Length: 309
Image (cartoon, rainbow, N blue to C red; front, top):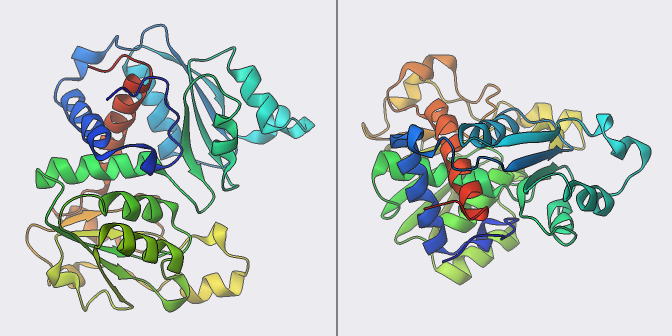
């Protein structure tokens, strides 16, 4: 398996073997960060963020800096030549002269794929619209492996916005490739997983998928609970968002019925779908999940740059 020079636009760009390679290196990095402190010395990451981000952008920047590399880029397209009308293709061709690897977030689905077609250096999709978010999926897999010790024989409930949630779409497509995974999908009927995605997962991997509108109905029977926010920025109607935004709020009372070894995850940012009182529950690992995201991105970039070992 050789990842050097690859573009990562969709989690399906990586085989299960490549995913496991990235996960294992990420956990080695977490165990001994000093060993990798100069792994990418002399390398430059360009962060091209056409859409707001906190965790993804900062974790990529932190990941490169922790490996001894440097970072350039923009966090607001309005401060770049995009404001002057420059297209993606020209931006990418120019940035190729300045950096060794690119991470790109864009509100339009397919924009990072377009960027990769004009780039001679690796392009990583940092999230494109409601489509894909492969490095969040890597973060999620690293978290599951760290706390559950393996990625198999897991019943995972995913709750919230399953229609627009790019993190959800990437995670569903990727986890379904692992052995004996079952999904419980919890959402309002208006925010169910797209039919084409559900059908393709079942057809390709023969996984069990159960859909419900009730969190309480299944919280006692899952190994992992993955909460997500209702994404205001994806709605065309303010009224529709207001109607759905409080569909699910996880409280300590509801968690009383969950397994003692439940792994509670969230890609963040949180709005109000997990009450703050839940933060002290030892099963709540979403902030550790964000921390593990740095190591997931360190591992991925090192391997794409030919520096992984």
